[in-house]
Length: 469
Image 1 (cartoon, helix red, strand yellow):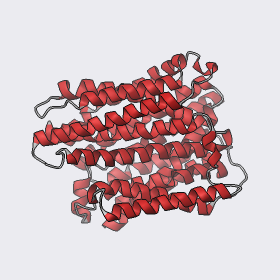
Image 2: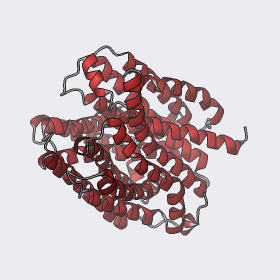
Image 3: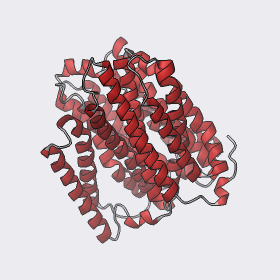
Image 4: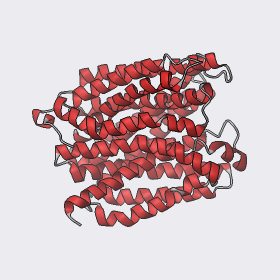
C-alpha cells in the first residue's frame, strides 16, 4: 500500500474513532426505559448510564494524552479500543445496576485513551502539510455529528427490533476490525523517554472527574445543595494540588508553560464555550421535537438529519476553503457568531409550532456556525503545542470541549427548569423552558465569539493560502 494511500486509510480509522466515541454517548437514549425495567434502575440513577461514561471520559483525557506522548500514540490508540471492547461486552452482559455502571465507566476510560491518541496520530500523519491537515481535521470533525445522529437512529432500530444489549455489542466487531487494521496503516513512532507523573495523574483525574460528577449531578440534587458544593470544593482542591505538583516536578504530566504557546489557551476557551453552547442546543431541540411537537424518538432523530448533513458538508467543503481565505481566527469568531444567531432564532419556538417553520431554518443556521467554528478552534489548539506534546494538547482540547459540554448542559438544565421545562404536559411552559435554554446557549456562543476576537492572534500569512478540497 502506497504511503499516501495508507495515510488516508489511517485517517478513516481516526474518524471512525471520533464517530464511535460520540455515538456511544447518544446510542443508549432510546434503550434506557428497557434497561431500567430489566436491570432495576430507579428514575434517579438511570441517568448514570450516560453520566458514568462522561465522568470517566472527561476525567481521564489528560492522562490519555500524556500516555500517548510517552508510550506512543499507536499503542495507546490500540489499548483504548481494547478497553472499549471489554467495556462494551461487560455492558451488554450486565445483569445489575452496579455492573452496568462500572462497564459504562470502562467504556469511558477506553474513549479517554482513544480520543487524544487519535488526534496525535492525525497530527503525525498530516501536520507537516497545512492544507492536508485542514482537510484531515474537517473529516475528523464531521465524524462527530454523524456519530451523534447515527446513535439516535441505531439506538431506536436496535432497541425496537433486536434487544438493548446490542447497543453495546455493536462496538465489539468494529473494535476487532480496527485492532486488526492498526498495525497495517498507523505510524509506529511517537514514543519518547520520560517518566509518568503518577501523583499528578491521580490528582488531575480525581479533580476533573469530581468536577464533571458535580456538574452532571447538580440538576438532580440542585445547585444550592451541600453535596454539590462539597464535591465542587473537593474538585477545586484536587486541581489546585495538581497545579502545585506540576509546578514542582521536573517532568510533569502537564507542563504549565504550555499555555504560554500563542493561541493555545484562547483556542481551548473557544472549544469549551462551543461545547457549552452546542450540546444544550442538541439536547433541548430533541426534547422540543418529542415533548412539544409529539415526535417519537426515531422521527426526532430523522428531523436532525438536515442539520447533521449541513455540519458534515460545512466541515468537509466550506470550512477548509474559508480558513484558507480568511484565517482560523476570523472563522472561529464568525462561526460562534452565526451559532449564536441560530440559537437566538430557535428561542422563538412555539407550543403550536412546526418542524418546517420553527426548527429547520434556525437549526441550519446554528449548524453552519458550528461547522465554521469547530475545525479552526480545534486545529489552533493542537497546532499551538510543540510536536512532542501533541498528545497532551489533544487531551487538553478534548477535556475543554467535554467539560464545557457538561457545564453548559447542567447550566441550561437549571435555566430551563426555572422557566417551566419541568412541567411535563404543559406545552406552553415546556416551550418557555426550552426557549430559555436556547437563549442561554446563544449568550454562551456570543461570549465565545467576543473572547475569540480579543484573545486569538491572527495566523501567519502562509497559513491563509487557499485550500482546495
